[in-house]
Image 1 (cartoon, one colour):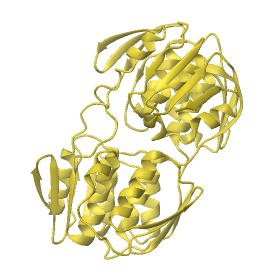
Image 2 (cartoon, one colour; image 1 turned 120 degrees about the vertical axis):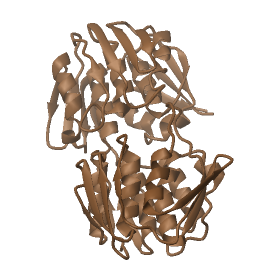
Image 3 (cartoon, rainbow, N blue to C red; image 1 turned 90 degrees about the horizontal axis):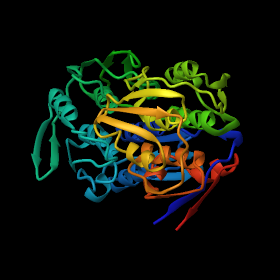
Image 4 (cartoon, one colour; image 1 turned 180 degrees about the vertical axis):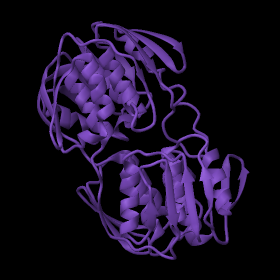
Length: 417
């Protein structure tokens, strides 16, 4: 298996470009199955999670051509209603295909989806939502069978805000008969981006990006061309890297307006940064101050930036509280930071206290999941001596050729087999 070898302690300087948003690309790929026409997607990140979903789509009949960051995809006919268990176990985004296949074929069967080990991630919301659309759902041996002659519009209140459930219900409602109203919906930027594409294809969606989304079902959708928005998690992660070792580090091809919660923390800490229309420039400072963070749905502090931000807090002066409200078990990686010299106390599965600043030292570690894995890369770049990170498949799921991109701005990082 591949691993990263990192020699830390070096300042990084230059420009690092942000790639397309994983969390929009996955949803648009799934939405393409709503139409028999060909879609052209631009700025698609070349990462494991995208590759696996494309592979899953191919297994049910999609024809795909890829050149660089452009993907052309057409699903003229869905040839299978049973999703490959081996692929589904690798990627939670498999759940995105339920609506399109159910709408076109009347049934779909899949095992419980896989993905990152970041606490319990049940699919109850999806089951409840499809049941309100009129589907019949049966469960047997950790496998789900959805059946429906016709899906009909409905009113649905999300008891818990969920990005993926909001997107799945919105996509499904686009072709369901009648009107659908989704309340307490997620508002992440990828949601209005998806709605904008669907509306360009003939859907009638209003309110995407607010807590109430209204969808008037249409009989068919076309397909067209869409450019995936920049990945705000990647942009924020690179900005945090700049706050750690930037000399300075400029993050380009991004959407700073999607990262206001991060900048509010930078302001409180005294981080030296500048913001332009599509760039962020950050310089490392020795005198940053501790702050408390609470993860929250957008526009609050994004849970996917909690791990890299915690690395930054290990270098801040004072005591910080990190409160992870979205996922259980998403703070367990802090034990690995402690192995590197951090002073982090776990209060409970949702809260840790960070004492700083503390020097970090290289260790041999294993990436537990996508975002925690990248936080270990950041820690390795800050640390003295050499850090080895195993299980980097997890990191590859969300960051394209990250060792090359970091190397271009001065990082000493290499991939070895």
